[in-house]
Amino acid sequence: MTSLSLVARLHLDNRRMVVKLGVITLLMFGFGYALVPMYRTICEQLGINVLSVSEQVTSGAAPALASRKASTQVDLTRSITVEFDANARGVFEFKPAVSSLQVHPGEMNTVMYEFRNIQTRTLAAQAIPSYAPMQAGAHFNKVECFCFNEYVLKPGESRHWPVVFYVDAKLPKDVTTITLSYTFFEVPGKVAGPVAVMAGKSS
View 1 (tube, one colour):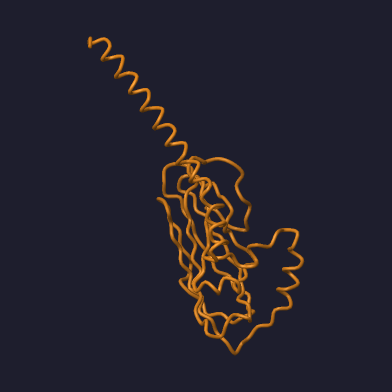
View 2 (spheres, rainbow, N blue to C red):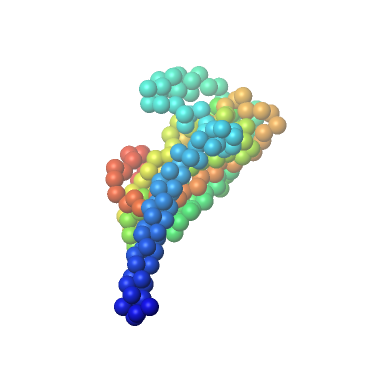
């Protein structure tokens, strides 16, 4: 085999490797973008980390939610500890303003979450909630929440988001502690687009 044919073969092998790497990169970006709907579908099928009723309500059903909220009775004889957890899947800061609250079933409560982009580039990110114990999710009602919206943040930008919620009085009596956990992760390959509008504050 001549040196010229050897060089040509090496060039051909290099081109094939570049094509393979390009395909793998595209598949990775596609998987990251499809992660949220896949997560929701799997959770619905297996009954894991199910969404609360308020997260499944569409904008057209808002009057019904408001009516249900208005008719909720506060049970002052019972207290529930709600713990707040925050997980960041990326190089950014994400945390709740308080670690826990003592609440009464039917009582409206608000907790603030802070997100800060500490990278030197703009990023798109979004959050997924989960609950423990699992059966508490059906009784944890959010009136306002940033979850499942995608946000675009500039380098160094901070956002403060409220989560307004109440615990349904039908929560099983043996449940005395609920953990609300959010996992915030970067949306791969997407750093531009409409920013979700929330009653949050950026700085």
